[in-house]
Amino acid sequence: MNHYVPLPQSFFEQPTLQLAQALLGCLLVKETEEGLASGYIVETEAYMGPDDRAAHSFGNRRTKRTEIMFGQAGSVYTYTMHTHTLVNVVSSKIGSPEAILIRAVEPFEGIKLMEKRRPGRAGKEWTNGPGKLTKALGIKMSDYGHHFTAPPLTICEGWQKESFHISSGPRIGIDNTGEARDYPWRFWIMDNPYVSKTRS
Image (cartoon, rainbow, N blue to C red):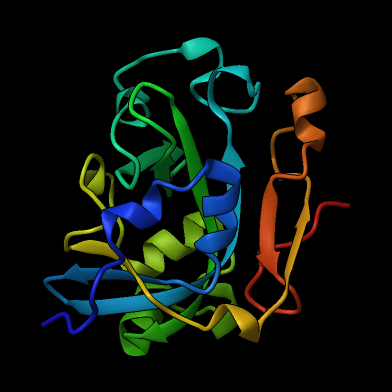
């Protein structure tokens, strides 16, 4: 069913800030019983572990929720915020709990499926935010602990890196984290209409 080849484990073993940029343009692919949906990653946010006040693992916090962050790079870290599922790529070495939030994708395959999952919304609104893209692609909490190198949720090769420019700036929605709110650890493809929003 899936004709995409997932990126190898070695891809995920880059340093976190490097990986957060390398993920841009890659194809995020989710298989479900309803069919396959995919989108090009256009925005990411890096969370740098124990010293990053915005990270779930700040202070080396190890809970049932954050346990996977201490695992292998390329593992799937899903968590719930309000009513939304958010999806992250675990990064860094085992025992070093860093992760990258996938903030937005540009729809590619499974357009009808996305339309059905995001009814009454304009195409741009399907996937231009971290809680929106998981709904559109069918990513669920049950994906927690899987690995992006194996279905049903994979990251595959996408656009040529030379075909776009990358911008960076402060992360979004972390206002109560002191100086961490200003670290320029959000990365996005310049001028892509699916990027969630810029922080004012």
